[in-house]
Each structure stands twice: as C-alpha cells, then as structure tokens.
Image 1 (cartoon, rainbow, N blue to C red):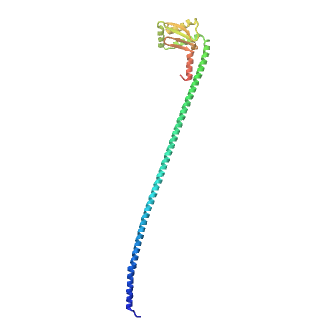
Image 2 (cartoon, one colour):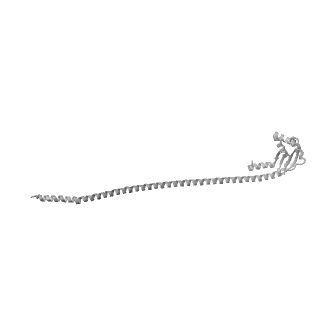
Image 3 (cartoon, rainbow, N blue to C red):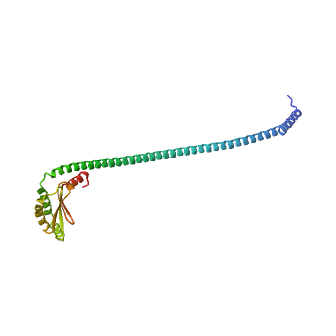
Length: 249
C-alpha cells in the first residue's frame, strides 16, 4: 500500500480549514448564544428566587399580622367578657343591695306599724280598763266610810319627810292660809270636825281647813294647799295604772 502524502496533506489542510471555519462561524456563535441563554436563565432564576423570598416574607408578614389580629381579637373579647362579668356582678350586687334595703325598710315599716298597732291597742285597752275601773270605783266610793279616806290622807301626811311637813306647816302659818279637803262626794257637817281634829295637828295647827267635792277624783281624798297637793285619790291610781299599761311609766 502506497501513501500519497500530497493527498494526505491536502486532506489535513482541508480538515484544518474546516475546523477553523466551524470554530469561527459556528462554534463561537453557538457558545455565545449558549452563554447569553445561560445568563438569561441565571437572571430569571435569581429574579424568581428574589420574588419567592419576597413572597415568603410577605406571607410571613401576613401570617404575623393575622396572629397579632387574632391575639388582639382574643384580648378584646376577653376584656369585653371581663367587663360584662364585672358589670353583671355589679348589677347583681346593686340589685341585691336594693332588695336588702327595700326588705329592711319594709321590716322597719312593719315593725313600726306593729308597734303602733300594739301601742294603740294598749292605749285603747288601758282606756277601757280605766273607764271600767273608774265606774266601778265611783259606785263603790259611795259605800266606803269617809273614815277610810281620812285614814289614808292622814297616813300620807305622816309619811312625808320632816322637811316637807315643816314646809307645809310654814305655808299654813301664813295669814289667811287655807287647806282644802276634796272628796268625790260631799262630807256631812258631822264629818268636818272629825277631819279637822285629825289633820290640823299634822299641818302645824295653824290656818283653816275647808271642804269641797270633785267627782273627778272618783274616790279617796285630796288635800290642796297653796303650793302643793297631797293626793289619796282613786283617779290618780287609775291614771298611774293606765300609764303602766300603755308603757308611759
């Protein structure tokens, strides 16, 4: 086999020219296009990554805002519930206080009315009892001997303290002094000297003893002097008993 070096050389030159042409007019533009395309892809990826990061940041911001809104809403609801509970408790307390005040006022009014009713009944009963006792004593007084009233009046004089009796004696020693014996029914003329003899020594023996009648005393006797009255009458005792019944004493 014979090698034609001229032919081989020409083919080598052709191959070199072809490689140069391919490199000059095809490979370089393709590489340029590929590089530009790659740069565009890289830019697009970078822009996409930036957009994704921005979107994620916005989503995180929105999520945080929503969480804050939910927390604020929960706080507002809790505050509203607390205020409502406080207002309800306050209203209940006020209502209970108002009810207690009304109940206390009603109890006071009932107690006052009951007390007034009892007092009125006591006064009425005491008045009826006093009236009945007065009528009985007035009828009985006519049957009692005057000496009983004389003994009672003399005993009342004797029971006075010494200084009080001295004051009565000084009053009777004054010029024109008069002591009046008052009975529910008039004493007889025969009774006058008996009463005078019994009472005048107890009054110091001076002055004059007069006699009068007053049906209002019901029974017993009174000794009326210038500055004092000594009572041994049934009307006063009925009045005292009536005062006890009505709670005045």
